[in-house]
Image (cartoon, rainbow, N blue to C red; front, side):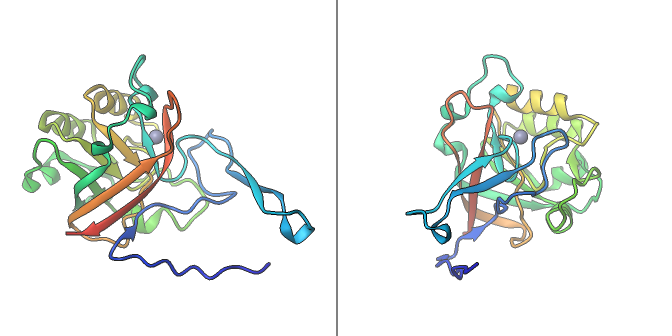
Length: 219
Ligand SMILES: [Zn+2]
């Protein structure tokens, strides 16, 4: 099959979202990603058209409060300022878990958008197998970030909480505190520092989450 060569004029913007494709990694128990061409020009159809089937929490995506909070806001209620504006990438050294001791020296402030770059970015996206021991935010770290009243948190694998660890409690704490979450970033191409962030999830009415494109530009 002939493929168009992809040369996107980036103007300084760096793509930190993962590419969607059939068979890609997803949260255990979620349905497989299927992107299927139902009309094909190579077969004589007048254009190319696909169907897309996937969980709302696959790949790079935004969690809405309604994901874990009854009567919480849906994805269509998201304020653009949650996902557009200055953001800070913080590099984490701990290869198991993000702990408050590692966050405190960064002097995180109220209203910040913080994206945590861990070993996940390099390690987890090159395989189609779900990585169970990805680096996650400890419950104490979440308490710290809620106390700091950050605006938005981004992580570089499929959940803020750890697999079979603290998923429910950390989602409830963050989303209940009005903090919006980006999951499934790939931050391997950026380093610690300040960036402009644009991350726009699909506008799904009452959505619990939605796939998103996320880009950063160094400030
Ligand atoms: Zn999610």
